[in-house]
Length: 401
Image 1 (cartoon, rainbow, N blue to C red):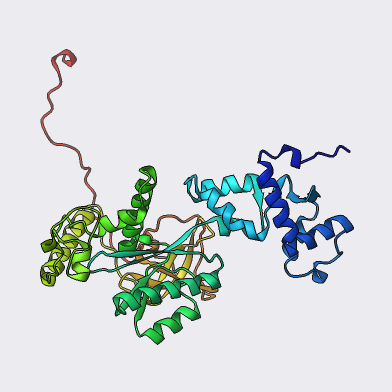
Image 2: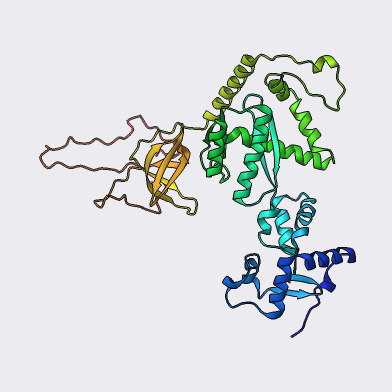
């Protein structure tokens, strides 16, 4: 066997190497892992401390050399340095997948993939198109829900409690804590159709705008907050009023020079803004309806087909009820799903004698069955004449004798 000195091949400075060693020596969890690596692991993980259990399944890959722990040649990062390593990974602005690929190549710590991802919550006002961006530091679902509720409370205490909050179907919004939050703060909580981002288009468009601003600010080495400030003061192409004017009835001061008269509060014509938004929606609807078709509403008890998340085929199910303008509850097997009407197809299939519909996994298109009937008591049928052309034919001269 040949032993490889992993520390000697690390392309880092001595200062960073000593920092990793000191942090590893001060990390109580990694020191317990070191002891198990040197003295041997327990035969069962139930006897291990809870913080060490994530490393139990990796015992054949973990090694200890010169004050550092390695997992298959990757440095095991101590707890105190993980936040700094995450920031360094995001400094390249390669996106989530790029940062994860880079991290998995050189670093390791439990739940690294979920912690490397950067999560934001976007809150947008439907009337003014004014949106707020809040960074979430939490990674788990429970702590992320608490962080989302905290950020929304900050926004609502600043701008007021809305009558209706429309969100997607993320686990942060479907838990008990968020339901208690909506009841305590007295607002109605509605959700979009699962797996159909178009039904939450206002927020999706704000996310796209925010990403574009962040990207351009990074490329130009500008402050992203100043970019957001300028966006909020930019008049809309539709009505010539900025989001700040719609929300605050005034412009906000920016780095651009302007007279004091422009900063004076002026009440905008809300009816004009609403009318302009409705006209824009009608125009968008006309353009969308050019290639769209009207989907027939479903009735409770109808047999339908729906594509399940984990499958590629269209599974047979039963429509239970309508839960939104274009959303339905469908029962497939033993589970119930909520889907948009676009993701549900009507079928002419019937129930079997056992009470369950026949499930044809290969069925992708659904047509009405062709029914042929015969009646032996009917008289003879009328002769059918052939549908041949009766026009005068004149063949070309070269074909004539």
